[in-house]
Length: 381
Image (cartoon, rainbow, N blue to C red; front, side, top):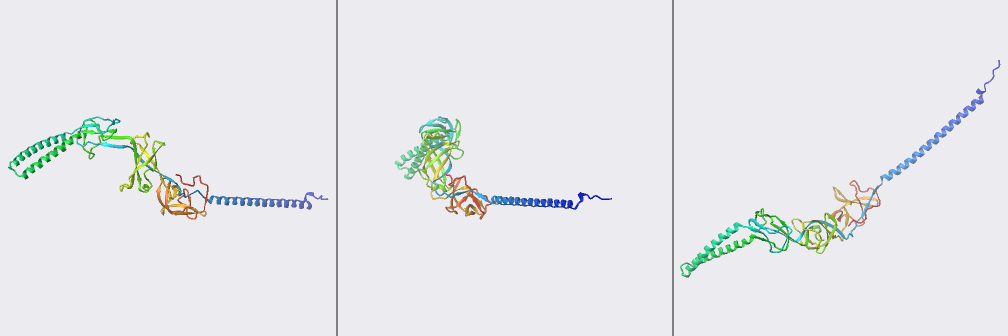
């Protein structure tokens, strides 16, 4: 029996299949190598990008401002109350009861006008008593004078009666003068701005104890306002210094005025100096208005920096400056406080670059990058 050979199992076919498998394996291996190379290459690129991003994020950006020692004027704002050029509270000169009042609030008065009448029974009784004593002393004086003419009494006895007579005469005159206190009159031309009495009210003499003013009279032909300046700024305020008066409820309305008088001395109780400012006429303001007084003080020769550059730490007040791209903290001694700006007495140099709003955690030697600032380089006036 003859066996026919299978062509599929021939050695030639087996070699060909083996070769194909090897080729496929080589292609797969090359593909894997290429994939790995691409993977590591992309990973390297991402690493470089992360390094760059981390380096960028690690940079600290700050905004800075320069010192300005050429600010011409620095604002100082103080409160004040408008007053009439003359303003007086009228008190009773004697104890008594209100009999009648003649002037009411808003009415104009002239100097010497009768404001009110006071019943003063105690003084009237004193007048009667003093008059009786006077008449008795006068009779005794005349009798002893006649006796002296007859040489019936000594000169010393006559002198004693004479002194007693003159004393009672003086007492009578004094209590009679007090009867004038029944009438309360205006001390100057003005307007009655307050009336604190009614008929039958008990009033006390003077302004002590429980006494109260019967009337308040204000002379409003011209207005004034007082400002009390702390001793830090007292040397910068002088007569003629321009000021602006601003009404709180109308901040857009500014009234220009000037300092008319200064005390030229510091009050030891308050450590302030009083300054008077006369307002121009027809301002529309009334006595009693609360206003803000803005002074423009000369700051020539001062070193002025924004308050937002300050750091407050256990070491005291400091500022952070940029030197050669690094942070340097400096301790400073402050002078006058102008609100948004402050005077520095010592601790910084003219060419220092101050960091705006530095964080409390900022440290010496920290590398920083200065970014453009939207703020002006010079402090605001």
